[in-house]
Image (cartoon, rainbow, N blue to C red; front, side, top):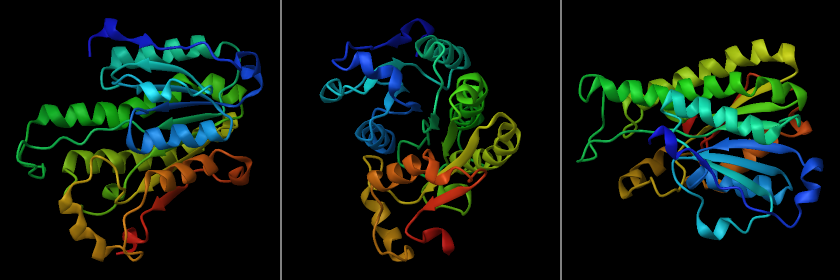
Length: 263
């Protein structure tokens, strides 16, 4: 995405006067799947929401009174990432930020849906994957550190079961980037604890989204709960990590896998 396409789809809200009293979450990769379900969960709990994705907000979501800003940006582009952080910080002003959810990610496939391993595919694709899946969360954690400290907030990184076991469909670049994000979660948790910021991760397993194809049905026998998870179940784990119920939890990775990670 070109740098000059970074834009904010802010919409006047009927409850605009009450925005100051609401906790705020910044969430990336919000246009579909787990990200979209997480937006709906936070909105349902009365949070103010600032989102980012490469795509525009679906029309039916523009009526959400809590979804105050959506910034279209490509976080795989470091310049776009910097612009997004600057723009979102302008929106926040002097208000604190209560949660940052790093959900945006990419997993490239071949035209024939062949798994991309370590020895096939373009090495440039690895850099692209790591730019979005690893470096963007790091840049956003640094870029929002001040408002997160001000808001006594937390960070939730969306990792993956593929970062812990060899997955039959997830490519090596995706898997290793998620493993790196798990390690980054621990490192950030230690450093940001000094700022009063908690950092945790949620690792989904097989979740029923538009990205899941018929081939994933073969994985169900490997899941102790004998079913795939839903985006709402992942969203629930993300939301709870951002509440006082988990106020003494940091550096933890929660597996939302139906037990699949136990094998």
